[in-house]
Length: 392
Image 1 (spheres, one colour):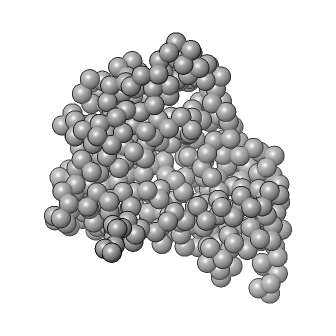
Image 2 (tube, rainbow, N blue to C red):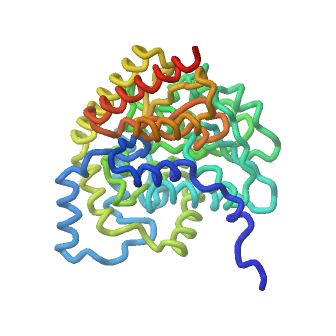
Image 3 (cartoon, rainbow, N blue to C red):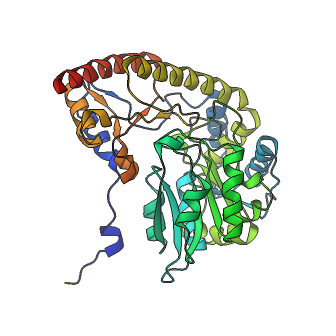
């Protein structure tokens, strides 16, 4: 009997996050700081709109690219937040989460078998590299540096480009590091992108969770809108992870092909979720502000705690993650995370789950209550003191 499996799928590594998620599920007494999911419920007025849409019998398919009302609100939102103008009728697609948008953007732009390269800065979200492979591209990893606060520099980008490079994935604010790119950083890499005639997939799912200054999209820079697929969604900013809704905005010729793939693979995003998302965009700014303030309080608490215990960690200004360095203990990230879970019953994610250059770091999510964070930090402080005593 012939092998029924696709070689490129078999060779994909499972997500490094899943291992610790499964382990902590078997420890009811453990505290998990491993999952990147808001601990807030979806705001009631958004849930009410979803419920109302069901009560009104809105259980039909929408158009493939999404509800007209939602696409209009997405364009309005981007105009007022980023000062970028998109045409709702041609430049926007509503997807099943931001992850689907990443997948179909790559598949719409890559020609399999031609050796086209996708540049992926790491540490970064676990889906970029597998999606590039499944689209038929060659992923090329750019290893970001702690000393640069895990920002992508123009030199790092320039050094990675070959005559086969086609797309840069730009994952900021970043999961897992919490790093951001400021306007000056984006302007520097935009020059390189234009020089080499590249395209950008800019994953801005954490755009609303920026704590130092307002988020800047590379698509707002001169000459970059026509080169950029801007990806965002509702999971992080509006605490709507289970609603599975995202979107992409970009040049009409690329969006048209993305709609075609989405049409055949998905049909349309969930109707109930789309109606709820209209309400989120129209009336959800205060909810986002409240959640962002709570996250920022937790972020500051963690940074203060790390400083007190002498644990190295650059200050992140985006998303809801910190990325402390644990190299002083002479252990791999996986060894540290495993032992910390077993001995102190706290789950964190090894940095290597997000790329080999994450070795020596941990991702700690602060999408958890301050009360849980305080307990977890007390356990981390005790664990760190134990490890330092062992080294003496």
